[in-house]
Amino acid sequence: MLVPDNFIPPELVKEDYIARKLCASDVYLDYLAVMSSIDIIHKVRSESWPTTDLTIEDDLIDLSWHQREFEYKNSFAYTVMSKDENECYGCIYFYHPSFRFPDGLDKEYEVDVSWWCTQKMYENGFYERLSADVKEWVEKEWPFRHIYYSNRVQ
Image (cartoon, rainbow, N blue to C red; front, side, top):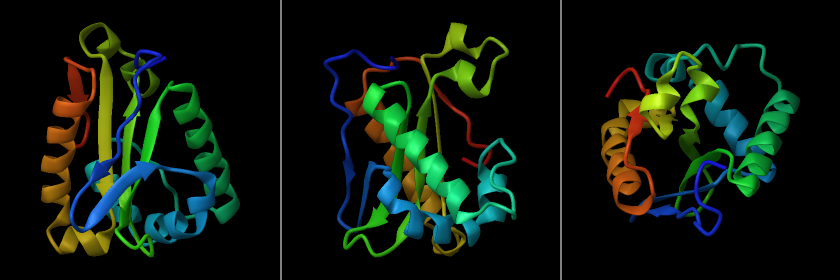
């Protein structure tokens, strides 16, 4: 488990968006967001996912895995949605550092936090705001003291 058993993962609620648990039922809006934003996702996160051949079925499998991991408190994936939940703005991830970086970061850090937003939202300046909101949220509402932010553009 990434957090204590009695810890309840909080939502990030702002006046114009919400970050809540990513669920398999979010696949349609998530898939649209991902596929419209592959270049920006690669730019801000240090991995090669997603690829242009990602199918909606592949995304459904990923979202189902994220949902189950969240329920087991092994990792946490959040969808960043408009307040009316008609548009996905991006995602936020909490992983154990050894999951993505098996080179020893887990000895120095408790968690790896990363995020992305859609190309449209990035062009509107949302990425910088989301970055600040995520960092404040993690530092105030999560039990971590040694946090690794793995985004490339910060």
